[in-house]
Image (tube, rainbow, N blue to C red; front, side, top):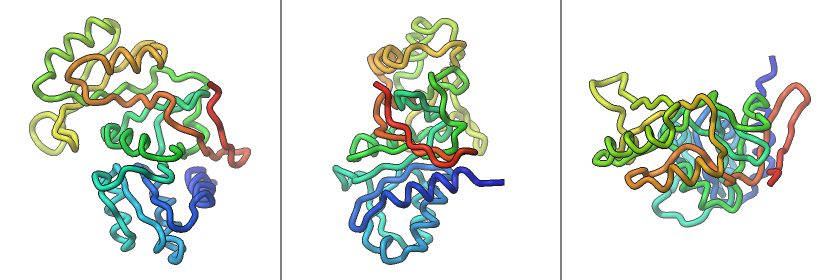
Length: 229
């Protein structure tokens, strides 16, 4: 069986040129890309890498590649990342890892943000398959939950809990994470604005009109999708 994520990573590799600053997210497609970059030692030695992901940073370190903290950078040439789902406008939901705040920072720093993955990630319109994940300041948890319940009365709000220790899951930034599971996803433009306007919310996992293109692989080969805005 063809590994479509590997095929998408191969296509992404062709976009990288010497002396660039490359941002990387998380997931198996990104891991494939790192593994291939490490095999091209001359190219890899000329690059600087940064990542929103602990696991990706570990993998980069294993290969001895040059890593820079996002805090020391103000621009990237390309930021590559996967997602759970994206639509024809390249609005994307990234609900799994809970690291969307840093991912958005890196995406905003990049000359181009490119989504990678298999063709199953694409949907003409985003739907309610995946939750919207919200990062909340601890002191604002209860008031944010109350405001979300008023704004989205049909949605289910679930605080992420740790599976390895007693208590809530804490984000990389020391905050709380809430999954908002909709029965029907609101329009992305409205959802993006409504949620961001609530004091105490740091970020949410809807990447609204941030990506410049998506590279996906499937039965019919590699497709590059540009936003239809």
